[in-house]
Length: 537
Image (cartoon, rainbow, N blue to C red; front, side):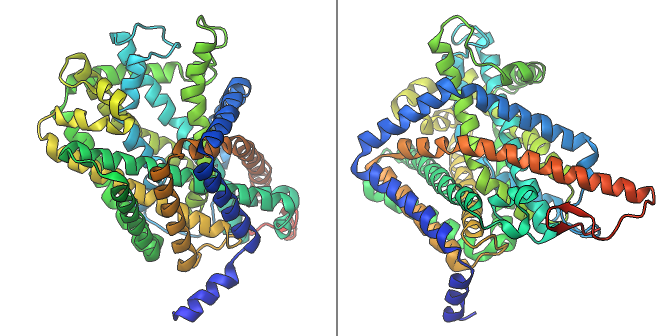
């Protein structure tokens, strides 16, 4: 395709309103953080504090409803509904599908927090357990809470968002965009209204903020690793060069597309992820990891419902207890909600030809099954090394931040230098796939739902996100933008409930139609599943 025709395609497919307003709001936020960092950070922190103090219960309740609904999809009668024509085969093999889904989801965060979160909880114990700091009870509780924060709940919101979009897109030719969840109420021919546009614009802003922040955090982790290994400070220029390098990497992946770019890097990610996990498990305190991890897993299963509704409001400690829950659990739930636009869209994009049950099992159960061994291994190793004086990880984190937690951990193990390098590569490649999938989602959102947005569109978003991350890391303000992205989790918690309602209405009607056809009842060809959409069957 010539440059002129490629640019023409970019202009022809562009949803100008969503593109301009979404990018404009993000640019305004960047300018505010750059010129008025203190005021912007204070404002965002104030809003966040208000949310977890007054509405934290709502985040907890919504997330539990989503988990219960996904389990219903796994075991209930709607699981066999096909996301596409009844005879359509999946676009990707299961291995490729799972690798891309996991890599594009929260995997960069999983690698980032793997060595860090459990050691935090080991020192500052959750009031849910009431154990003494740095005690055996604190160790089990610390690993158990990492399972809770990164397990079933973390993956559920993405699947809930992705399923109705995939259903309408591949059974009724609906656009691949977040506002498609409104189809049962407005009809597929009326998805260009004001409410739909607002949802898509908010999705653009949440995606930009979320991914730029992650790119900044992972870039910081990479820079800390370089400084840890070389002893040399990188400086502002080095920071810009590192983020630029990461941006070029995922922009090249963008240009190659889903089939060649994301899929190939995702395969590499999963192999390296397995290598680092197994190597740490074998070279680390294997028996301790198994003992603590097994007990923590049992506690996670047995106390899942109680933890899901725990606000700390009635516990001794008052505001301090509620603040712990707000700083961790509610923070995470809001963060996952804010990431639902781009991860949900990406899941929808790669799920053509699969059933509802296959997506739910892969996206929630299988992803959790991979995540738990990682956190058991990394968290258990970090706690063991700290407890036995082989690595003072808490002091390193206190001085250099959570980005440095993995380096003293791996350094204390045999082949520590090799593991450190592999860890750096792993967090970088996972970041590349997350950023790649987000630019794909931004492309779909800003083109009215095109399944394959133009390369120019995706490259533009890639460079904008990279430039934003570089700016924020040099001038500060990452915390403020992170807070802004988290705040968008509130509205998207509501949108996920709309997605649930959308599936209840549509899947329920399709299931009823299917049962009537099985009973050989004469169903008119014009039977409608949703207003303005005729069923394909």
